[in-house]
Image (cartoon, rainbow, N blue to C red; front, side, top):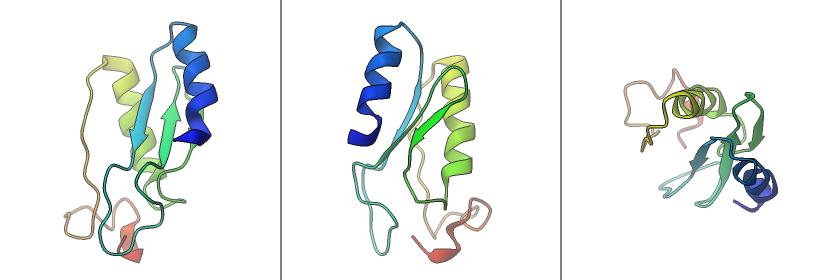
Length: 93
C-alpha cells in the first residue's frame, strides 16, 4: 500500500476518482503479500503492483471500470478460478 499512498493522496485531494486494488488475503504461493496495492487514476495511469505481472492487466481493466462507474468490486484471483490462466496465474499464485 505504501507505494501508492503519495499518488493516492494527491488524486483524492484533487477530487479525482481512482480504482484501487489491494491484496487482502493470500494462500499457497503468492507473488506479493497482503497489503500490496495498485492504483489506476482517471487518466489511466497505474501506480504500484499486486502481483509482479501475473494479474496486473486484469486488475487494470477492472480498476478502469471502477473509475468509470464508481462501483466497488471484490475480485478473487486464484488457481481454482476458471479464468486463472486467462489472467496469467500459470504460477499458481
